[in-house]
Length: 160
Image (cartoon, rainbow, N blue to C red; front, side, top):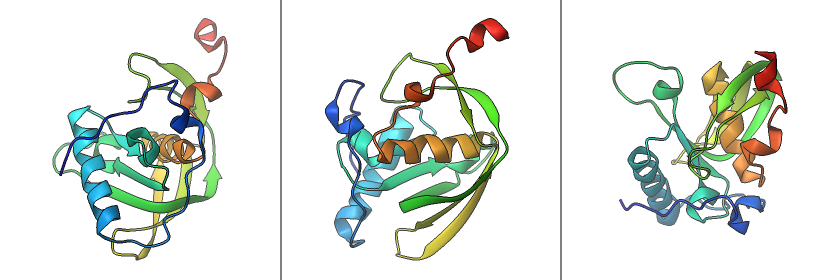
């Protein structure tokens, strides 16, 4: 495994749409491993391939951290993820490894269902509620060139 450089706001790769992974091979496994190491080194909850300069539809989320659970990690490796359903609404403060120090309020669904391939090519389905739903949406947005600040709720702070 190796640490990869996090691409920061202003890097045009963060605004491009990622391509689907056509074949899960050793290169994808290395990417997944490197993304995980990089995410943990930066104290992140999730990371998308464009954040390390790779325009492929690959995401990693530590669901245990997202659910604020103590103990072991629960690593979700999502290849070609897609949100298949959403319900409810929540507003949370979000941050991002690609925008250090930046935070803003964003409205996301309260619950999402995501379908994706795992590192072995198996189709899996995941349900996320609360912050895990936020993490799914935030990271999948990266694959479409969307950054959380694009969805900032203007003036929300004054309403609190």
